[in-house]
Amino acid sequence: MIFSKIKNITLFEGKVGLKIKFWKNLTKLEIYFLNKIHFDILGVKCFSYIIPEVEENECKINQEKKALIEKSCRIFLKKNDNIKIYKGNPKLNYDSFTKTGKRIGRFDLALDFLNKNLILDEEYPDKIFGKYIDKKLVGYGCIQDPTIFFEIGDKIYNKNFVITRKDLTSKEYYEIKNEVINESKINYFFIDEKKIQDSLNELLPKRKGENVIKNLNESKISALNYAKKFEKGENFN
Image (cartoon, helix red, strand yellow):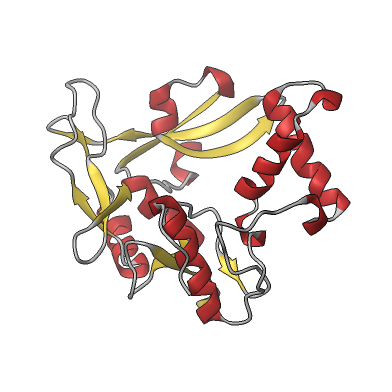
């Protein structure tokens, strides 16, 4: 059977199903139990999803993957009894915690860390993570935004630094401008330059600073500065 060859890459314990559907027509439950998108043709996607095992109206967690995350990422998955589970609408009732018990996000944060080879920092486990490639530490990032990490060659993040057009190549600038236009759905010639300026400073945190990162310690400082942005605090020295 084709289903038996599709690997479950989620934290849900359960069987795999397969569907072909317009992506915009997916229900919230289909997105919640999404396993993997296998191909996309003109907006029609073939995707696999998990049919979860349910016990007392709660989805069962994949214990093997849970153990792997706790060993590899220093994130500990624990039940959150404060989450209300409605009858007939089972969910995975787990959150992500540091070793000392501080909550840092939902269960999907832990899975994201595993897939991206991220590990909570030992010194600041509730703020930043280390990024690894082939088991080698290459930079640091902020838990609130695990989509990026700061590495050698980036800038030491300074929330007060203002990125302007002169800091970018023409190609980089117009890529951001086109992104703003597409999101705003307005005419190219009527774009607000201030909106582009704000987007530059929001979308390019790795460029937001004067000093270039020369070592991993400065990468860590940059990640801590970026974390402070979410806490509305000051930069680290």
